[in-house]
Image 1 (cartoon, rainbow, N blue to C red):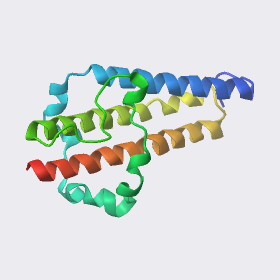
Image 2: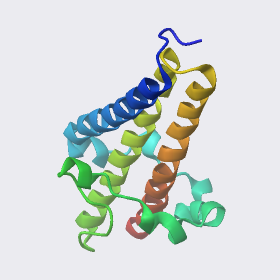
Image 3: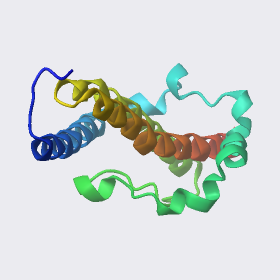
Image 4: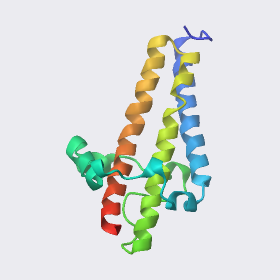
Length: 157
């Protein structure tokens, strides 16, 4: 049972505004993190051997067939590093691209976290829909980042 009882139209409006706020706020915070933070090897962003340099994601989800349809979030913030394509083929270019995949992955993991807050004003079933939305919206992007980073790691190793 929600803490606040509102008409359905207001709940839908608040859900849209809240998700927009959370996505943009989290993105803005992650954009402010220095590139050096993402250039370091951290456990969270490690490409694991079981990922087979990203090929696991291709085999399980056929990433190559749909990743081009994803919208790069940099178009909304009008700044950032577009990951639609490589910005060069030198080793440094590849390292920066890999670092930016880490930034994007962190952004989308963090974007899942606000989902439980939606239980505060949504009916129980709609709260679960918001949880489902958070995962369905963010996990494909996380998978693409891990796929791309695995491929880059195989090249730069």
